[in-house]
Image (cartoon, rainbow, N blue to C red; front, side, top):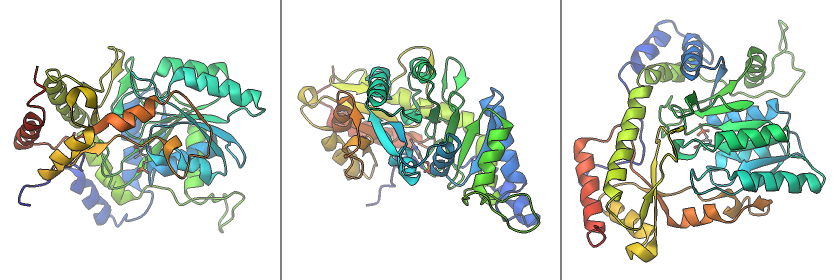
Length: 382
Ligand SMILES: *Cc1c(COP(=O)(O)O)cnc(C)c1O
């Protein structure tokens, strides 16, 4: 195939990343920890505001795992988790020997349904076990119903772990995503809004909690000249090289958010004239999404073709698109665990598709995307 691949979401360097890495090389700081790691943390703290503290880690998954440890999740504990998400939201519950309890989505933001959440909490308490934590996700960068979810977490005194892996740069009522939970989580994996090639961060409201997370992330070393350990540790710290990439990426974060939002505007305009296709969008002005990925649902009955037909039409032109996250309660590895809801997420999964949304899409890429869409939807144009 001679046409260059258009990716769903690929790394997009800002230009200054190598400068930070060069300093690391010049000072021989090729290790975990180091000035770039501390710089990345303070960049993020400044960006997020709200007096949060940030610990830079090796991945978003590591941040969720350490978050559950900070929230004292132990073997046998139940942890509530949004069903429609990437498996990394749920896997760390199992690392801790806990039991996930999955919650369906609501149709406005596709995130955790507040009614199903409350139903689950009451039912788990009635069954004799109060859940230890709630993991809610800002899917595709779209903030979940923050006021409702936070109110329920407070009402039942269950800490909220906010999986903001896809939502750096998003906000709700002017406050940045990642700062609403007892613990917030960010990811800098290669496909995320900014990348450190691989990495993540934990966001917490106090220095003591940050120090605790960093302690676990660096093998739980007690204060002693020799290696001494009173607790189980992990090797989860970010490296100074990766953090160098991150520092360069922080300089272009807002510009990249604007470009992702441009992709979303392109698709929103396009599909406004197509019957049977709905674009995930901000429900009210309280929401500000980074639109990490633009996602649509297609009503097969109205369009006469399925989302899989559209995916194949893109693929034939060397363009990547992907079905929405398959809900966790439908995954072979998780289907035996409790689930509460009305299959909103299953329907989204059946009908939904994520479209190329990178901040590095070129004008020519947009023309190629439009051509595929025009051809596919020619009989649907209003
Ligand atoms: C990417 C992602 C993670 C995991 O982050 P990694 O850095 O890849 O470990 C967790 N949750 C969600 C919703 C994600 O999209």
